[in-house]
Length: 237
Ligand SMILES: [Zn+2]
Image (cartoon, rainbow, N blue to C red; front, top):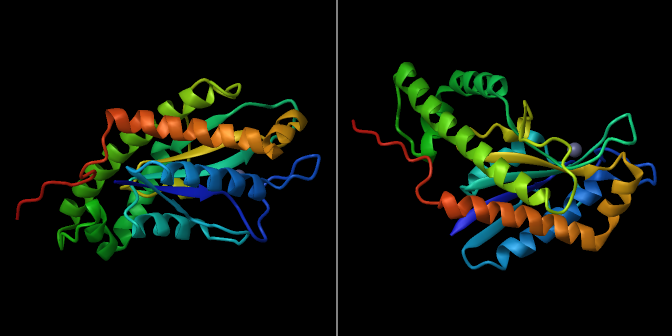
């Protein structure tokens, strides 16, 4: 059984991007997120968890904390892109950039108790800062490689239903991608600032197709990377 944390972007007082026709990103992300959860739950081997299931604000750090609390195997944040030029279009997938990762690692390490608890959720009781650092680096390196694989699988499926904004997985320092032990991606489903794509994002059939494509990507990833004892770092001591 694999658990997938689904993170509908924005919510509550944070509407996210707003389309020309008045569509709020927060509503689109929730609609697609709910569809994705229903599809995930329909598979006996998968379980979905929404970081928000309503129109309310959830701080970014809390979204990651919720995923870690259910020991999520994957984290998928759902958004809709916006740009000043209305002709910008297409789907994108992001993973955490190296720079974002290293600053995260530094921050986690600043909190010693977290560093000890971090690797595979096992409290190693690490008193040695250097050892903690090494374990954290191992976990984060593996996580980032897995995030890239997941990103490529999902991007490939999105390319089947929409134009791609960029042909490859992109990197950015998004705060919600910073769990050092959960492969995480952020999906920009389409451009809500593009009037044509805004219309599609509002369309229930298209929302369903989008959720279906993300699920196919997740399954394609799991087919090559089965969710077994991920992040377990052998520790002899
Ligand atoms: Zn967004």
